[in-house]
Image (cartoon, rainbow, N blue to C red; front, top):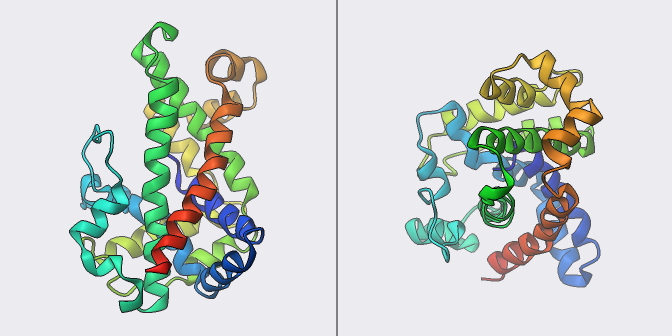
Length: 253
């Protein structure tokens, strides 16, 4: 699934795109900007299971594989109706939930339109291990691009969020721990934990993995020659207006 920094990059793109959406876009942009730190945290909060005992099925509202017509954000609102009505929540809480819903949407776009489309073609891959390797490399590559796109304000924006029982299915402590971990990674000069995490999964050292990511021949052999990366990036870009539609509909209730 997209990394936290990929989700934050999409959050930034949502704000930029709203500037071109006319009056409704300006209204929504103003509302999100007023509570931007809450939206930032909401955009990454679903992955808090990384540092907590809260199961991923609980934070993402589906088991693998999801039903073809399942929309995770709708499952969340059905399970917790109080979250579906932003007028009954504090503004920062509602904006946080909007970001959370957008995260759930993007995760399923990645799964269905990227993983299922490009990684399930068994005749294209020599082995499951090769397919797994390419997927992890692709995520790390896109994560690096996303982190480079984030503004310098990203670290302070994420750190400024102050959740207060915003998730009925996860404790504040778990959300705070996840927030703290990501803020540390956004600090200037901080090492990329994404490289460390995926290097461990691939069974190689972080230094070796980092060097390989900068090797054009290695990247061509393992990713660019196998996956249409430009098409993947187009899918991620197309997810931005879909996220805006979701968020706009949420606040129109």
